[in-house]
Length: 115
Length: 114
Image (cartoon, rainbow over all chains, first blue to last red; front, side, top):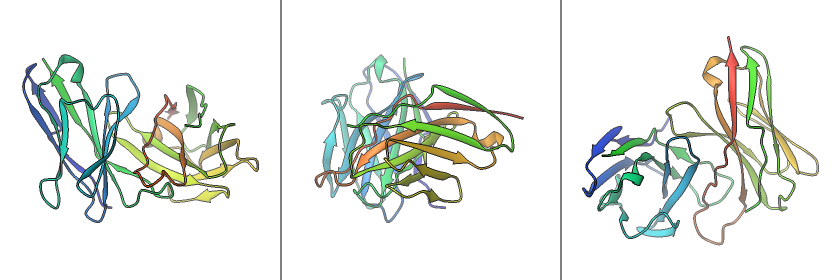
């Protein structure tokens, strides 16, 4: 079964450093998303992306965050200057359609620890 | 967004059926009912979705009340691997051209006893 692949599975970084989280969505999917989950809390939407543009972003997705699809297969989330409160699981997801009669496929996540 | 209400937790025994309820009394006529689950230390996983009719797939069944104000996810024979948090999420049929986004609540933590 097709999978969304995320790397690395775990990243430790120092406060103030830049991190890039990488995702390979399912090959025929056109819609891409990042979500995050702080330990013990709900899964939260960060951003959606289609046709090389951000479609929607949440209040969490401030100027420190950016997304990019640098080639035909990767989808990245960059945090420019990490803060302690950015420590969380980050999940990438993709879907075939923007309509609600399709499901998402999520990756296994990257655990980001900011120290 | 229309709100859903789920029990915080449920318990089941292995190889028995599990019925996970979800109330969504403010559902609109064009909202799809989606179910996702999240196994420990994993990303959310799509389970099933429906609009009006009951749905079956290899993972589960979805029973939707006639008035659509509630639904039930049915796992026919629970296994230890089904222990997870189950989320019931409503999605509008058409998000106005934008990608639709999933709004996760706290879900139901399902414990499966051997």
